[in-house]
Image (cartoon, rainbow, N blue to C red):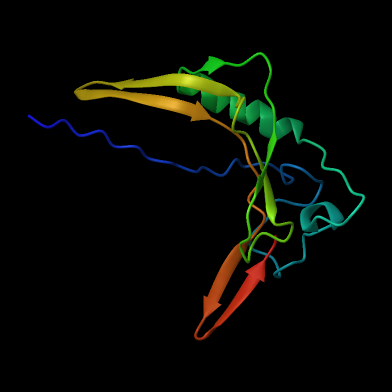
Amino acid sequence: MIESFIGLEIHIQLLTKTKVFCNCKNEFTHVPNSHVCPVCMGYPGVLPVLNEEAVRKAYIVCRAMNCHLNKKAVFDRKNYFYPDMPKNYQISQFNSPFGVKGLIEMEGVPKVRIHDAHLEEDAGKLVHEGMTSYCDYN
């Protein structure tokens, strides 16, 4: 008998007033690139500041998934090139995320194991119109 093991990576957007690492509004319905700053764009000499509201909401998600909460959460710099990533890196958590080893139990369904729950920035999105693509860093 063969047993299947399926892994999923699921992203959720926390409804915060500002972005995770700067004070720009967290709104996607405005004019493209109208809520950006030197931190969003990765200009030299600027440093990110962690959004406390995002941290609180991330911990709420961890608790909802019965994760073990790490006493120390660390952010990492994941380097890669992608058109919607102006800094060519993403601030994320890999080695020490907020929550690990979670478990979701639902009646009549096998237990869902959660490897980890972490917070990361999503710098922008690509908008495709016909043969042209645009970057929106809101």
